[in-house]
Length: 118
Image 1 (spheres, one colour):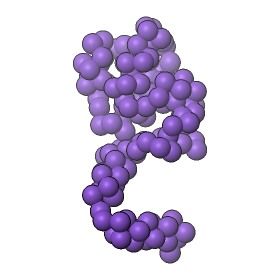
Image 2 (tube, rainbow, N blue to C red; image 1 turned 135 degrees about the vertical axis):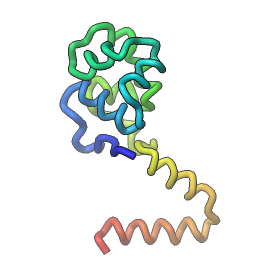
Image 3 (cartoon, rainbow, N blue to C red; image 1 turned 90 degrees about the horizontal axis):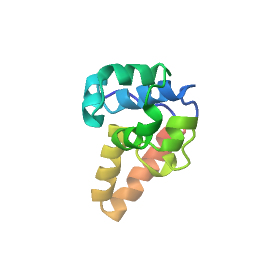
Image 4 (cartoon, rainbow, N blue to C red; image 1 turned 120 degrees about the vertical axis):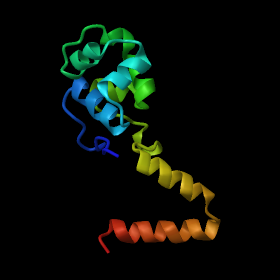
């Protein structure tokens, strides 16, 4: 699965963020267009910041791509740390929730060690 934009360095424009979020969700332009009830060319225009009718569709776009409106418009998403950004993160969260308290502690300890590079 493609990586989602990192919270520290989101793409520079709303169109680039829309494209990155679409790709991170594994959607083609046709797939996103179908879900939104718009043409593929509309998606292509939005992704290249040739706005068209995106303003009226931003909330639906954010909902389908599972990102905030704030992220699409500004690149900042205050909710991001509390939400899984990729399929892999969501899978890890689901698995974590299935673990016993002891196994959760062991997993967190291992993850912290790996994050420190060791």
